[in-house]
Amino acid sequence: MAALALATSVAALPIPEAEALQPPTPARLAAVAAAAKQDGWGPQQADLRAAARLAYERDKLAAAEAWNHVRRWAELFAQTEAEFVPKWIAAVNAAQVGHPNMPSRYATRPVPLGDALSPELKLWLLGQSELSGEFHALHASVDYLPRSFEILQELFARDAAAFRKYPALAVAIALVYDVPPPPIWPHAQVTADALPRRFPAPAAAFAWWTKQEQLGKTYHRLTRLGPDELKFLVDVAAPFSELEWAQLVSNHPLGQLAGAYTMVRYRNDRLANRTPIWPGASYALAEIMAAGGICADQAYFATQVGKARGVPTLLFTGAGNDGRHAWFGYLGADGKWKMDAGRYAEQRFVTGFARDPQTWREISDHELSFLGERFRDLPSFRQSRVHVAFANDFLATGQDRAAGVAARKAVNFERRNQEGWEILLAAARREGRDAKALEGLLREAATAFARYPDLEAHYGKRLAESLRARGETSLADAELQRLAAKNRSARSDLNVEQARDAVRRAIATQPLAQQIQVYNQTLDTLGRGAGVAFFDQVVAGFVEHLVRLGRRPEAQQALDRARRTLRVEAKSQLASDFELLGKTVRDAK
Image 1 (tube, rainbow, N blue to C red):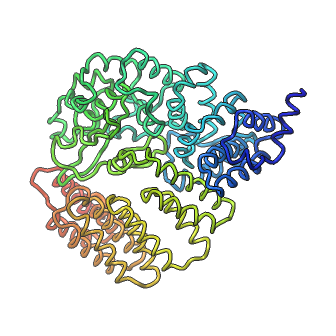
Image 2: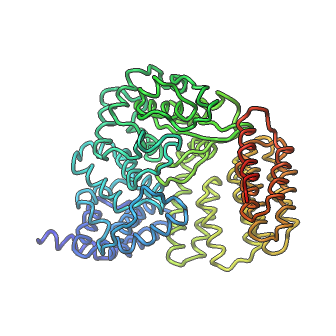
């Protein structure tokens, strides 16, 4: 008991300046953990924050980062289910990533989240600065931490040595398996009876992949991948028995993994008969290979073949000019994502979308290309990330000016740190900066991401919204026209989004005559020669809106105008879509 009392008294004292300017020692971490065991993790945060901020103010970034990691763990460990769950539900609803496979109720006990972890595991996590940085950078507001912590504890309790060797794999499993997968994953063209949407048991998944690496069957060394990459490995839909079968039938090395896509012969008859849903009773990999399939089945098969070999993979879907397609991407030997496996089998498609298995939000292949540049491995980004962490903490504690200063340092070190720009904007708003000042920051952010059309458009559209809100409609239109002109050839999908937003805004704010006028103008300026994506997001939505209003003549006119404007090839998928929508209009009462 004397040792415990001594340790508790050490942790209760303010951390000396000389100690704060160095990363925390094992003795200090043990003292913090001992004090938390007696008094809880909440009381430990003040001294940890003070040490972290002192190191940050003295420009000792390595020490500041390490202390701040410990403080953030203490913050998570101290939060109770009753505090966490309402905020988590609000985040899930705001991000619109809830789905029917999730439970309808979640416990809200007054129990700290850290109680799910053993004292040994908590102490070990406190001392892992690199892993802590990866966890805190990856952890999102929609992660259900009560379950994530339970998974971490289960994996640690089963095999602590393996956990310490493969901590990134454990983190990936914990953050992906926190909630069940949605019914539209990995794609929506197979029934739940043929492919149950469920993950394997966390311990089974951890044991299977570590065993495959030890047997030499993985193409990537799992210990060299981070949780931000491994999360695209552990989101497996096929049972491990099928993955082991895939290892036997596929002999494609990593450099030729794209060939797994064409192992499944294409079924033209299903396309001709308009049978997009898998017709078989089982979606086993062997059944797919034997029966053949369409692009969604080919892409699914290939992603599972990759995961069987320890390769992170994603299934993409996208719309081209006259049809929809599915392909897959995978992490290559050089650490960069290969996005085009099967992508051009039928035609060139502008962009593809997949689901992030951690958050279940939609991500584009272009976003992954951005991540694949690996600039996050550069020392400049590491420094930028430290400044962002402190900017977040300053913002959370109401120190808005300090948050803005730290965020400015973050984007000065690395212009591509999007979180830094978001904090800079949030701090400026909370400081009471006027709309023109905020617009200046939005322009600056758009310029910083000029090589990344998704992000440039993201900030450009926000700039246009701000200009429009204060009556500068001409400047707002000019900004949107600039973006449209820049993206006309390389990123027509962004123009589709812009067209969709313009029509939706008109529906929400304008009388019917002006809605039709905006639709016609948008069709003429952004829809000429467009294809399925424009039809799906602009034409179909507006025509169905008119049908719901009982305006069948106007709906028919809108459809006819679109048919004349878009590029509709005979016997194409787009031609079929026009016919089906036309029937809906004709049959409307």
